[in-house]
Length: 246
Length: 268
Image (cartoon, rainbow over all chains, first blue to last red; front, side, top):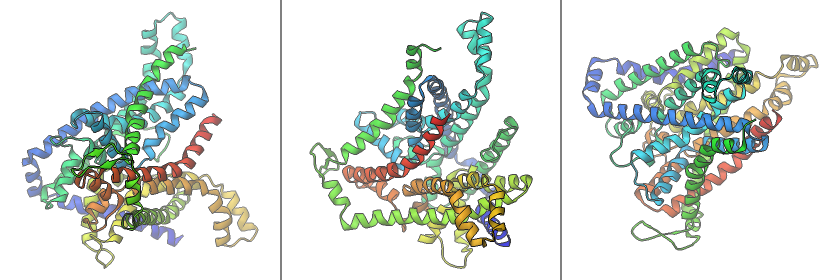
């Protein structure tokens, strides 16, 4: 058992030392001040937010349609669709990015915001559909029947019987997709045009050149955001069944 | 219940996504891999196998093999760490387990690039007493730390399902620790091991950022090679051929996983 204690401890040391080093270097007034003066970073950050939110909501809406269509399909079709969905999740990210770049260029789309948005949508769609599928599979359809029996129209049934059941999963899906999109480097790197930057692309450029103090402040800022994200997720979904994927 | 036409409409986004987001791009790559590169870096519509011939040239094959080696080494190291940690987690009380898992997973919620920067700082301190930054071993170490959850979570899910009674039975029958591990523990967590190694091996095959930043360009992986062929050298046919080979490897590796998943789905 001693050996296992030691391995677990060593793992924690290896995972946390980099974080602690960054927090330590980012916690300085010069670094923060330098960061506040870098307009290009904040511009890239707001680009990432808009892109992430747009792509996540689109992916989740489309994913919801797909999840419903799956639950209405025969099990054979469903298995086929699931295979198609998991495939891009298994692919090395670089292959999806490069393949999409080649595809956009050969169909004559010039690389820019459209291709960046589409590139993000394509890889988020799989995740969104998986999350929505978990919810759609366990929907309580008796509520829908009840609404129908009480004479509700299609729209009213959807609003009163289905939407409330779907909303938590919808939020979880947008949240997950947003986090994934915000962190994506490889796909954005290949499908973006000359003039588009997202935050990861900006950070990569800064790491490639001389490492400046503001990068530590930015890292600290991003670390705090993800901690806040975890807390929000914990508060919104306190009864999350699995402790593994909070 | 739901009319067929309505379901067709519902599944429309999926098929559009499949055609325009997945099949189209992959088809383009496969087609390009059989074409020729013009002297100016454009793609010419002449059908050849030249790209594949170049790829199986000693120089490129060597690079491909080294990348496979890096991915395999990373997989082995990651599992060597994740397996005992997964076992350790099952031994803890639920509260402690949640704490340890949370502590392990928090760093992975941070941006990937932030983690890479942190690791560069960490390696610069030379925690093991040897030069690590810009070395092969340093790259391996940071890749391993970055892929840990992909191995840990499926392994934990599988290991936690092993009933304690089975292990106790083996003990009662006089099995040594080694026998318990090889004859009881290993077979019962085999599926988790396969899933974990696939989830680590495939993405690390195309890893670009870690060799590029932590390796400082001195560790040259498949990711850097692809980026080079597509963006700088502009040899799309060669890049596409490499990518196609990578996709074939992914297909083969994914076959097992997908079959297993769909078995679960079919049983529902």
